[in-house]
Length: 401
Image (cartoon, rainbow, N blue to C red; front, side, top):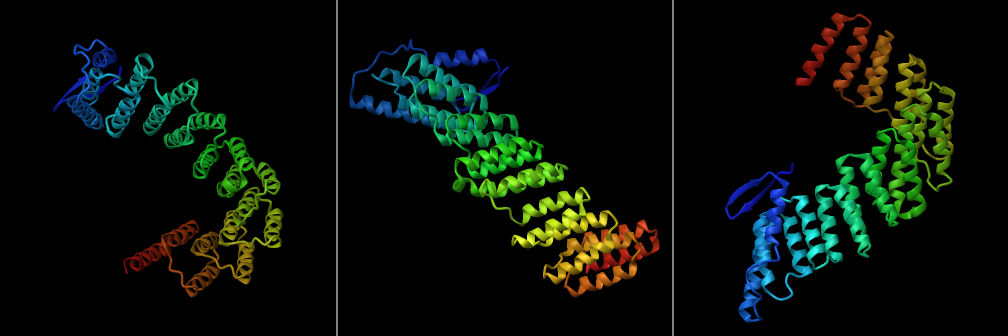
């Protein structure tokens, strides 16, 4: 059952049955209008202007029944209503916040049956309106109708349908809208392509993300370069985080052939995959490769390695890497220090922990909630309950200050 609200004057009545609603619609558009056509006169021009004004006012308020009654009055005049009159009615109705998608379809059906037949602008207005409130199935239907009428659907209308599908979050609908665009040799805007590839990666649909990535590159390397330079790292990171290191390496190897130059984030993603698989030799080999190709490891690169080393209890190796990091003038941030502090506590290396805290202080970092949590968690794990209580009280006082 379809519910809608229509306004009559200042009052409001609710029609809860589709049949009643369409009966009211047909009544307003009945060709058996009682009044006879009037001959041309200046007064008739004034009446036409008045009816046009009433139609626009009622429709823009969402009072579609009143708008249709005024619209039907135009039938008194020869040649009215025109396609322009219908287009103005539909445009005004879409300006309101009380749009009923079924009404748009009924207006379109009336034009097809009773005339005048819709023109290109009619289809464009309907498509844009349908895209705005997300009736994708109606949008596909209107595209097909537009093609049957000999018109090519405009790019911005199909792009609007695709973006609406992304907003609604349905990957299946987004694929349908993308295929619809490709059918007319249209390609999504770069920011929409990035958004869709992010959704695909987030859903584990790597093959589909790779397909879209390759498709956009083949179509126009310059136009889509910004989207692809961002998205290839998304695909790499998603593959590595899901443990698909072999697929990530294959994809990484194909980038050069596609004309895409990997950056620091690309190599960091691979290092993440190697670390997760505990392939430490490959990890350090990839680290060396970065320097060879001129991609200097950054804080995030080292922090990824620190995390997995500490998770594996390799704190001494992590501290050696910290020295190498400082030698290369790539200075750690507080996130890096927190990871190291936590593992030092876990391994009961309190003297080294105090030394690292002093180093942190010299670097001008102030402990944050994660620093306190790392220290407290590590100390509790070693059974230093009284020390943790004193430490947390001290942390609370420093926080309040």
